[in-house]
Image (cartoon, rainbow, N blue to C red):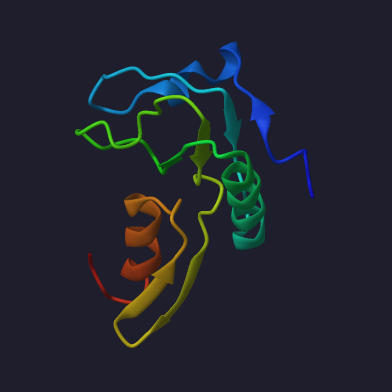
Amino acid sequence: MRTDLIRLFGADYVDYLHDESRRVGSADSISFPATEAEVVEVVRQMCAQGRPITTQGARTGLVAGAVPSGGLVLNLSRMNGIGEIVGQALTVQPGATLAEIRKAIEAQGLFF
């Protein structure tokens, strides 16, 4: 069990308590996994403790879906990989931004 994946929530992370809705929440801890295996490890640890998890991407939502109500913030912004374009299909990780996606597909003459 990796304990370095979860950090205590402190002043350095206050920006992760809100999204574009401007609602402000609270959290006990935060994690920035970079791989699917790290996500699985963090989720297992939190589930074993019965702690809530709020998943975040870029926090651009307007309905407060990324605003935590205690527990862990699982921020996926470091999972920003963009896969190979196959036909007109593209697989991306959850932290990939629209700007990064557009740049990748425009090189292939596609748009999104």
